[in-house]
Amino acid sequence: MSEPQPREETSGEKRAVTMEKIVNLCKRRGIIFPSSDIYGGLGSTYDYGPLGVELKRNVKEAWWREMVQTRADVIGLDSAILQHPRVWEASGHLQNFTDPLVDCKSCKQRFRATDLTEPRCPACGGEITESRQFNLMFKTFMGPVEDTASTVYLRPETAQGIFANFENLVDTQRVKLPFGVAQIGKSFRNEITPGNFIFRTREFEQMEMEFFVKPDPAEEERWFHYWVEERFNWFAKYGIKREHLRLREHAAEELAHYSRGTTDIEYRYPFGWGELEGIARRGSYDLDQHAKHSGRDLTYFDEEAKTRYRPWVIEPAVGVDRPLLAFLIDAYDEDVVEGEERIVLRLDPRLAPIKVAVFPLLRKAGQPEKAQEVMRVLKRRFMVAYDQAGSIGRRYRRQDEIGTPFGVTIDHQTMEDDTVTLRDRDSTSQVRVALNALLEELGRRIGWER
Image 1 (tube, rainbow, N blue to C red):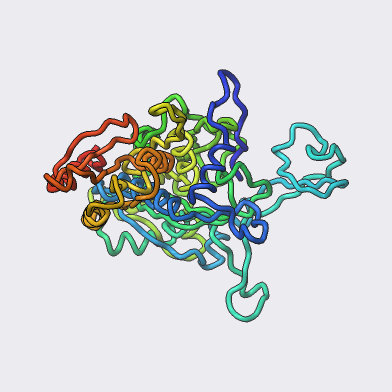
Image 2 (image 1 turned 90 degrees about the vertical axis):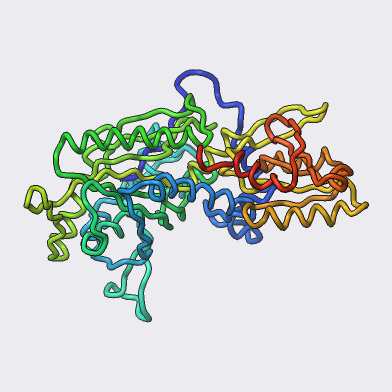
């Protein structure tokens, strides 16, 4: 089952930030481009530009750090996009990963039936067909012959690679329950009605973790609530306003075929509330199915209880694109600095594509050479921009617009005492810092330790 569409606001005012402003900023500043732009684009596919790829990498690294690096109970995996077709038979995706599809008899447009509020075409008002189930998996062929024997699928989720590797992981990693397996990777869904920029696309990256626990209702309940709280707090930790987040429990009729219960963390996008991340109770469904279809045992031996069983699973699963979009929306601001309007992205420094920009105040007196020397030192640790074109105020504004949290200016005093001006993006305050202390000071201000 596919997720529901974003819902409209039920109370309060609409967000001040519009999607149009975000889309325009992303295109103008090289964050996100429409894919195949010179050919008119390809429906709901996007390319991440120089700044976007850095932002995306930082979001993934922030997730990996919290979910794997700083924990002792989670390990990593990178499974293949193409997997044996029986994986998807066992998982239930061949049979159950469908959406109800309808066509307009007049204009021929297609829609997800659950999106329609009345039995007429929302585009032209024409009559629509009876709904039929449409599988969301992309189908392709492996090898030189295109027949049913060579049919494979682009994975619709990364999770099945974890379940298919359960035996390998338990045998090689000496893990003990409870433990998690995390991975980040591409997934593909042939969505009927993608849209809202990068909110719903057909090609996307997922960050998923399967957390295996004892098959005990109390244990499942404890860890489920733990991960709901952990994931909610992660978004707030990296800059999303808590008032723009909420929890929503899935109704029975919208649960995915594998789910015993799911809670969504929703975000208040400019177009309404929509899913940001889902935390699902998958039980032992996946291991049971793969054991049945593969003939492998896929049980875990509990040394304390001296018994074997298939663990239950709690799954926090999030796409990279949606939190990235949410971070952009909540960071977007417009204000006036020194009588001049500016757009500023108040991104958490840990997520910002560029951490620091280096500016020579003048294009003479050895300042550009000194600035480039400083840049080379900083680049060993941070992503750094260099800009010497235009007034210093205009250069600051350019960096504010892409979320660069700090600026370092080389001026007359630098040439005399090896100090620089360090400017803060949000407060616009400036302090003098010795060059030999600059790396440490920037590291403290950006710091992963928060």
